[in-house]
Amino acid sequence: MAFFTKTESTISAVLHKTEDHREQMHFFFSQSKNLFLSKYFAPIWVKWLVRNLYTGKRRTYLSLQVDDVFIPTELWDPRELSGRNFEKQLYRNSVEDIEHYLDFQSNYLKKKTKDFHFKIEMAFNGKGILEYGGLKLDPLSIYLKRQAPSFNWVSHTYNHLELDHLNYEQVRHEVIDNNKAAFTFLEDNIHLYSTKGLVTPRISGLFNPQALSAFADQNYFYVIGDNTVRNLAPIENKHLARKTTEQLNGFKGINIIPRFPNDIFYNVSNPWELQTLFNHLYQYRGTDRLGVEEILEKNA
Image (cartoon, rainbow, N blue to C red; front, side):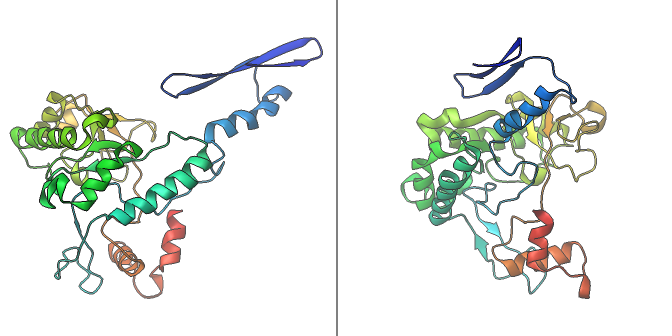
């Protein structure tokens, strides 16, 4: 608690920290955009709120792929301009990728934000652990199991199947099987695993009432959305969740968390793949084609 005295009046400010590391800041004085005290204290609480991280600016970091953890991704083919790479070039996160990210998280993000509890959330598919030899043979699974406390974890379903046309039992097993994989993989760190929210493959299943019903029956009431998709973006406030309804989604009560995807795509591994995919998707031709630096600048 801090006290500030000016002339005959005394005001106080309190910073309260809870056991789960949340913080609350309280000012006990009248505030207005025209008052001297409000103008004086505004920089203090703004700096506290954003932890010094680019106040007033937006940044996108080229960082670890947190989606599809444990399974490989078929890369974009810049020669064929196809998402189905005919030489079957697959990319899967490596131990080195994780090591580089953890160095970045510890030595940059935590220091910049002054939040030493900062963690990203990994959306994983348990099938990838088994397909690459399991927790005794797969180097990525072994390393991530050891580094599990450095992250938070969320289900991305077991097989990464698109859920738009699956029935109730199929979706139910996708959720249950990944939960079983989580308990085996995380063990004593299972408290870091989300039991109420999940990420659906390709943001699918959100208009499939059987999928939504299966989510709810497994106590999952939060799913990730995509604000560029019609009928998924919030209606009144772009930062607030939108709930599914009987009329639109066939099932009510699931919270769709707003998400703003960028154009640094999940299925590219180098600048040339990024550039050709971007220009192909947006149908840029000739002088309208954007280079890698322009694409990065657009997203940052």
